Image (tube, rainbow, N blue to C red; front, side, top):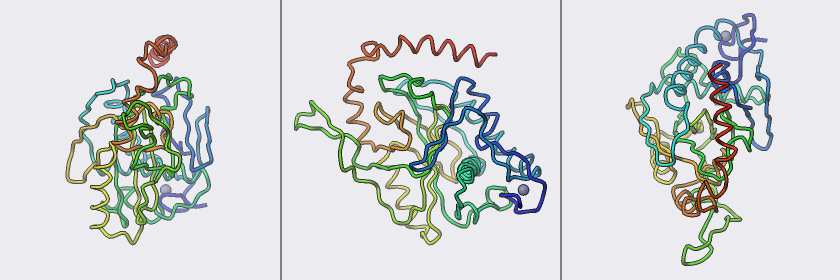
Length: 303
Ligand SMILES: [Zn+2]
């Protein structure tokens, strides 16, 4: 078998699907990666053996180092709901890092992802442009739900393919007064024919969206949709021409534990107005177990 990245017939080595350095950053954590309806949770280090030592130790290791430094610097903490975080980035390294993670995850499910196959020279840093368009967005993942993280296996590292973008929100007011809300049954999804795939990546306190556009999608069409997505959803787009973004919260009480549900600004405002159906975190007794948990995490990470 040839290397999944450079396609050379080199000796193959084990490659971590999620970089080992990131896994080591969150010793308290079960991590999950999954695809569509299939869910896989791993307690060991999930690996694939289809990458050569040259790619692993050179091009890909540069991406891992970049991803680790970015997550350590900006997303290795628990933010309060109204936080704003200025993130300095390299568009090239960040996008290649995200692509590498998603491509790894896909291969571990034995899915042939034609988009990545056709853009490997970008991922490896041999070309500085992709053949097809892509977009990168992010927001802060902040737990405003009444349930602590450890209720849901504390998923700090998660890659999901096939997310649902909900422009009208997952909740709506059930009366004209805004006194009660209900979950929308036939939720309308954001349907853009030129989108090939959308991945969500939860990496610590960040939530990234990687949008892959179809081969035939025109640049102008992509640009228009990119702007629309930024208007409708609480995510900020990383631009090739910029070096810095200001991120704010992109999760609410009802989708924080479900990264595959991408809710809109409208959905956020309705969800926030319910306070997660409890009057305060104290009321939900969330802090009771959480304080002990945070102590435990601190202890583990300092070891
Ligand atoms: Zn290789």
